[in-house]
Length: 367
Image (cartoon, rainbow, N blue to C red; front, side, top):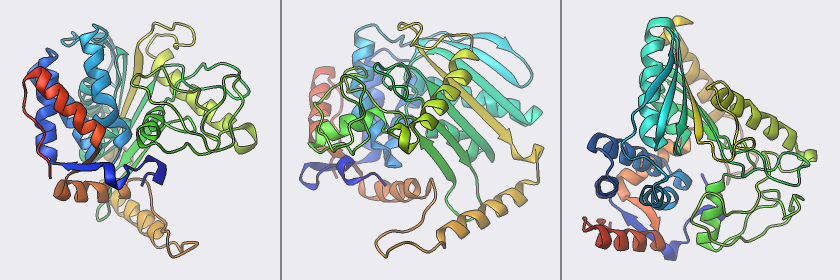
């Protein structure tokens, strides 16, 4: 569950019907000249993300940026994906500057097809746009009974340890794995101390960032709570610190993991990072592992259950907290939001009202 500073203040929260939101988002993409099937895919990725409670990468932050990029000609609404290299277990694809949330499911499904034949399938995808929540794409493999991994790299929002200037991206990683009786394992996290989109949530909510989230204009880690100004683009936010915050708290690990992601996503696909080429597009990495190629599937999911059950039964330090594992909160959010609607900030609902009027499309259904 998100920390309090990232939650919508109760007085500003409006619940909307997920099916209505899905349809309105699809209509918005269609108005941006996105083909129908891709508009459906993009809408599904965003609404599935919001249903899981990953509000940083749902409609609240991302949709208006995507729309602006389409309108400004920064994204190709009808990309022609091109295969660069294709082997029995691997493939490298040029995304033709299309939006990543629509290309991610396509890439992961290719990885799954290859894993069904060879045990492991790996896809690199470059010259692409923002991919949304990487965990969504990893879950596609888990839903097919495989272990899925998705990584993405790009941008220069993050300070390397001891650096005065930003050089690396937030470069999130995700892994999803199936289980039998318990909600699937789903880990999805940026390799920065805070995801860039959480800065936007804090600005919208009028709250403060935790110590060790950002640096000052000289790159010095700010170890106090601090407020931030609102921004509606990817670039105009304070310099982020690597996962760990400062060196004493392990920022060298987040820095190293960010480069780990950069190598697999960017270098492996034949490209250079944005620190070298500021005009380069985003690069992504997808992997699917066929469990049956390694061990018995039912043994695997039974073992997963034992691990997850043990974690859930671990004593907590106090009664107000519980020991959980990555994925269970997302599952609980999904059950709640399907039933009770997706919470949006009133400012986001106003944005939807305005764009619905401009585009002459349906309005959101409020719960």
